[in-house]
Length: 472
Image: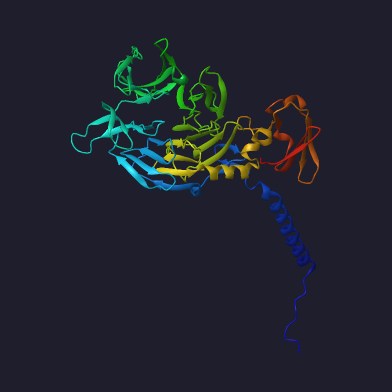
């Protein structure tokens, strides 16, 4: 007697089983095809353009977090040896790199809290504050090894050090004063920065134009809602000129300067100018434009030691989807972002050896060499190969187009062919006239449906193929 009889599957059941099997097989095939794209998938946010080939950072990119958590570090800077990093908030804190051991600290500074290590590695400029009554504050330059005071001025005026590090410029209510650091002697005084404004003080300064000029930002008391006015004091002509441009950063070699302006097009976040000629040599596109159309300038900007990368940050309260950005000036691409929920960015700085960068909230030390390896994996192009590469991605300022760039060193005759994932030719174009040294062109998205595509460029002797994704 049979105790159990296996059920017979109906025809419908068989079809359902076959459909499920084929569906799983097809899904697995798609996953395998998409696997090479895992490092290149777009980053998308509610009010954000698609960012192609961009690494999304996480806390594994940091080596450690140190320092006070009560207030943001308004300034971070590295020792010229790259063995120490210093941050200024309620106090000046100095830690070893990469170990993260506290080396020393100085009593807290004022709200300006600027730091400057001299190139000789021996001197440090900072704001000292007495930790006992009467709690007076003064600007100091100290011998970093012995803590002996080399230069001092009472109060907490903004300051900047000349490129040759012989002169310190100190701002006051209406003037800028230049002092010889070694002797303490007053060398010269600027004209009144703006005689038409009375309730003012110098808020920020920096030597620009390779030491020939000083950028000055004023603070107007009682008008906090009014953007601060900016000026340039030409040291050769002794004239002060008002400007619409706000200085963000100067490259370590002094040849490049980053500027922000409210008059820039909405699609441009800030520009890079040649320090000598003030001609534009690059611009950083805005990845996010608030609904009200008002851009917010970065909290801080830093050039990498080789001048190739730009690191910039935004504060916790701003609407940008990310807090930390790295832009590759050579490839003209955004290559790294840190989501806003991970880490707020305030001040930032690269180490002189280019291996690390630091962000000031608490002080976070990042492994930049590791991040560059991530960037290389995501783009499929090694840093040394970037000048001879093909790039395909969404245009951040022309959202209805695919942007294609071929970055070669020679003029070439080229034919471009785009295939879908089944090998069908969906687009062809002779782009010889568009590919003359870092050439770029735009292909309308309307010609493609969502999916995986392969772009092949053929110049007669060799072919380069790039895989890319279209999302609508």
